[in-house]
Amino acid sequence: MFVSIIIPTYNRAHSITYTLDSFLQQDYPEEQYEIIVCDNNSTDNVKEVVLKYVEKYGEARIRYMFEGRQGVHYARNTAAMTAKGDILYFTDDDMYAKPDLLKKLIPVFEQNSRVGCATGKVLPKWEIEPPKWIKKYCNNALLSLNDLGRKVIIKDYDMGVYSCHEAIRRETFFETGGFPPEYTKDIYLGAGETGLNQNILRNGWMMAYVGSSVIYHMIPPARMTQKHINKVMANTGNTVSYLEYREKNFGKGDLRLRYKRYFKQYLKECKRILGETLQGKMTLRFIPAWASYYRARALYDYQIVSNEKFRRMVMKNNWLK
Image 1: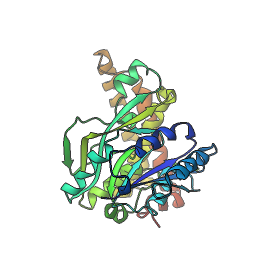
Image 2: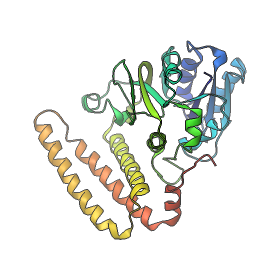
Image 3: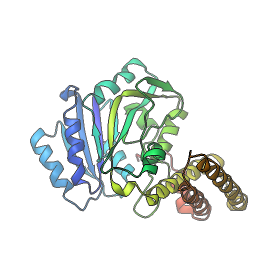
């Protein structure tokens, strides 16, 4: 199967070389895959860096393109529309793939025609030794990491498929309308790969995890902080409100009850965190993290019911048009 590797980039000239080198050295026939780098308004010299690779390896193997709309998922969608692959493989500009990543991952599509999306193991590559609490409690989805072992798992639910290590059947991707953007230049819209994954499952496709397909996520010091974890939790809150609105279509009259429920749920989380912290199973750092989550939900709910333009974007189904 021909594979298109899609890498959005924004101001990461310092790390994208590691990503490109790792994918150019795949133990997979070089005539069976291409690499597309989509520059999302970078202000550093990433274009110059990528074009040197294009000059060295040729456009048949690696291409540079530009997407001016700010938002990583705009870049992913735009690149996908130019891709030639039977399989669209999405990753990021701060990843390092093992040489057999494609060789291990792609066969799951050949062996099971109902698999529409597949991922594998995402492990951390710490740039410095992380704080103990980060390593103990955040070595997971909070840093887009995923380790379910070395086995192959095929299920009808999202097992933690992140767009830093996500392969999607071409027909699956286009029939589901692409990635709903998360960040745009001015707003956080919500959903991203979570929204896309739900659409994939809703259309009857299965998801696969291939534990022998491994990629490393470079984790800089800035992501090993309370501030970053709070931000991740806030983004999760936005995403959950986005998905909930698309299902339940709540209005202004529902806000008071929703806010009351959020407050009760937050108090319940605080009680759980406090109890587990006393048992040595948790850290109090998740109290402000959950506060960020519920605050984001409250603000998102208000925006969605009071801003018609925002609401129309939330209800948009196809982001490839």
